[in-house]
Image (cartoon, rainbow, N blue to C red; front, side):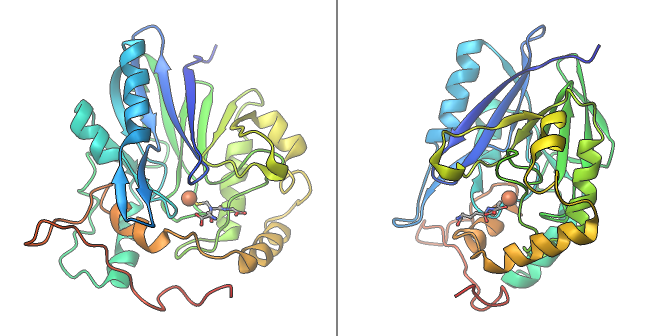
Length: 292
Ligand SMILES: N[C@@H](CCC(=O)N[C@@H](CS)C(=O)NCC(=O)O)C(=O)O
Ligand SMILES: [Fe+2]
């Protein structure tokens, strides 16, 4: 029988993200998946309200953090991985293809000094690499498409698919960021849907279609039968045509140029300048035009 970890989702309304704590109830060991560092774009203030909420939950449960996991370098929010590492001492991890994403954005930000070897994380996972959360067996599946470094963490019967499948009524993630590919996303989703039907699917965003309450948990069986994209579109080509047409209409996430410079650096803010202030760098006209 596949082990059933306890999974708690924390919805972050500012970016419609879901952060997770996945725990082995037997040992009290847990992993944090895709934690958000708060950012208010109007004042350029950063904050740790969300991350502290997760830490309070973990303290209350008496859990010990074993891993701080990111599924991909996010384009819409800052990762709280470094903050949580400082607080817990747990290692940070991401997929090893992050080095390709680092190369891409190193060029866009014109950062000749930037290390593009992934050494900003404690662990880079390879495809199908195994690990554990407490005594629960876990493994990594490469899931490129939304980004070329995206991975899915499968912990017992729970798959953290982030920006591949959303809830069945919302379809799938966009695939038009630098390094994205709708066809690759299709194949990644096929791998996820090949997991056992009862596998619990935990998504990374919920944009609350029709204004319904936020939701984040489904199963492979539900996704196969009901996902508005996957239940209807039967080939990679059909899927890519629908996905690419929709993506052309979507404006870039408002924080993409802010977020990638922090998230390709494992959630570290830029070093302060001589006056003690940290600055972000925004390249103009670097993303192939706007959906005006
Ligand atoms: N309005 C949001 C958009 C965020 C966005 O583009 N989200 C990505 C995931 S990072 C996505 O796949 N969206 C799918 C869609 O909007 O259909 C923002 O500006 O941050
Ligand atoms: Fe994303």
